Length: 177
Image (tube, rainbow, N blue to C red; front, side, top):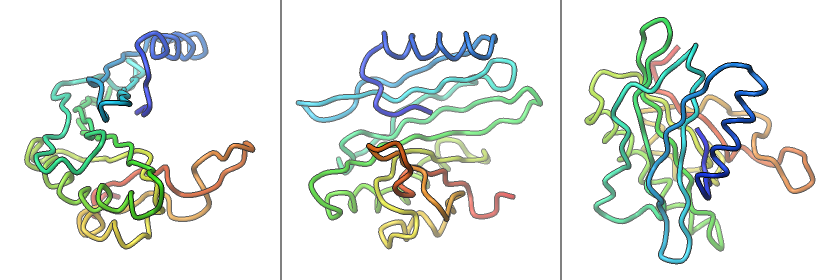
């Protein structure tokens, strides 16, 4: 999953670079532009065709309350072994302060429930830039249904090239092994 896709040319260049490095074909799907009137970006999924392929169901979240600046994007994939899974991706608003991030993070519990409804019985994975650490109280509703895979260390690159926070993360269903 890739967040902050600014244009098709950049996405095509990334896919070509990955294919050159791995010497294997990769599939690419992307969302419609999401964001405010002044700023929009896309989400994308790149899949190594020999391992996993896009199956169906690519859809942006129907955010009826308009909580998200950039509505999450999801799709169903099939592994080479025949298993399916659904991956949702999100880029939470950073804003001017932590308080600006809280409404979208709180809405992730409702988003997870929506994924369960849209893709019944599927294994769910939520990835993205959450702009808050996974132990923040705003994750309360989501953490009733899902758990973060990374709970220690840091995952987000800082401007100096080091790792700075646990903002980038992966959530899976609580009963996932």
